Length: 76
Image (cartoon, rainbow, N blue to C red):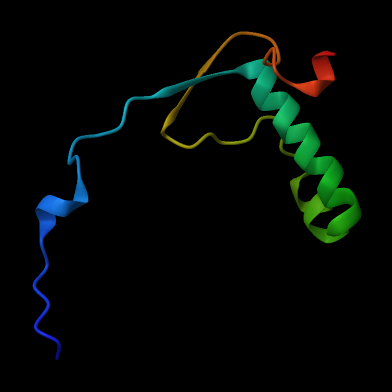
């Protein structure tokens, strides 16, 4: 044993992080992009996820109506 004592004060905040807004258009774009990658890299995983039209979103995200993000290459 090295004598280390855990110091919780070094962990930073202990309150929940604020939600991150993401548009449903961006979410759909990201999902389609992932499916295209899976189609080539892991056909079995691709087929498994084909029936998912709208993926579950991590609780940190808040989905709002809207288009693909301005900074996406797909918009150019």
